Length: 493
Image: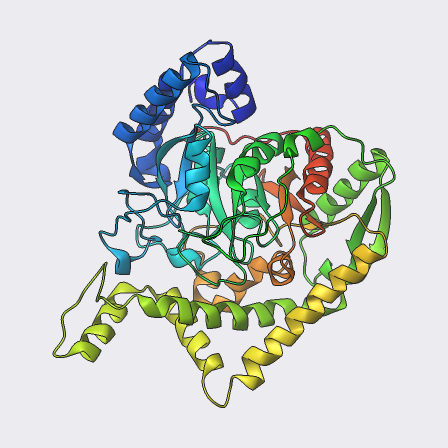
């Protein structure tokens, strides 16, 4: 890690402004770091050095002429779920082999319009389906963190594992990510980084490969709360190409940082104390409560009674929407094609060869719950449960709660190819136990690193906010960050 790659976005922004170095210098430093580390960490599946340096030169020229965007000259990594014009966009799936879109996603276009530089495309779970980044066609990402005294390679979480690992290992200044059931917050917690899933509708989904359309939302993974605030301001927008994006003013989130939380009501839901929760997680939660109490916040016990139904309902709604969205990948128009004796045979062979095991499992679950005779029993029931989950949160916020504090994950990062998890998909799905409620209710949630477990691995706390009140989450997360400090892995790669 060079000195340049250890700078946060905010620090790099200030030093670029004072002409201590150029965007080309900064970009070259990151490209060098990627070159040295990526063969070990597997965070990037495509690096775009020529494009990055072109964008950096253009940024330096703009700065010289007095045009300075909010992310001017800042090198970022882009999750492989976002369409990038002329650049590998395959959702880390074999079925999209060779696909290079002729258009740019709205989120990435917003970043380029603000002067950011693209370093490349980041690894992820195939079609964003996974909690460990082990379902990628390009192999697992390796977490830059290791347990004390151990050489075991750990997962970075998923699906945005490449984004989290690249940010933690200083292979980009920040990264785009997406969250359908925890795919920003869980990898952030596993890597000691900050990740925010904004309110559904805050960022456009146009040009982002769909997993579950009523749950997916883009957001940033960054080194600290300030950087996440800077990135979200650029990523968020209303978009006429996405009718679910919401036309509301986008605040300057950075201004919320440093504001007092005195008098704020922070809810502690009793339902998040799950059976068998590790002591480290409970201790971290208590520490987070103490940090906020010391800062003047009022801690109140709350109940979210339908929490226990969230995970089963999520694993009906998300696969149902996935089976519908993934029907378009058939070998006809783009990507992989495996020839067959007729078109039905070609569809079958292409999809069998192109999709990985986890994606096939979810397509089959989704197709089953949407099928005649089962739709009412499963999908319709799950949607009713979803309404009740949303109502639980609404009642708490209506009662004066400003934000809700919970653990982000039920454990710290686990080993790659963990046998117990590989043999039991449901055990893997339990990684999302604290995060899926937020997606089901369409609320904003942020994961902020708050401590280390007994093995020296990072743990995160989650704050859940009111719809479109990301400012309160940044403000509150910043208080936890100031109290807990920042966490960086010891370099071994």
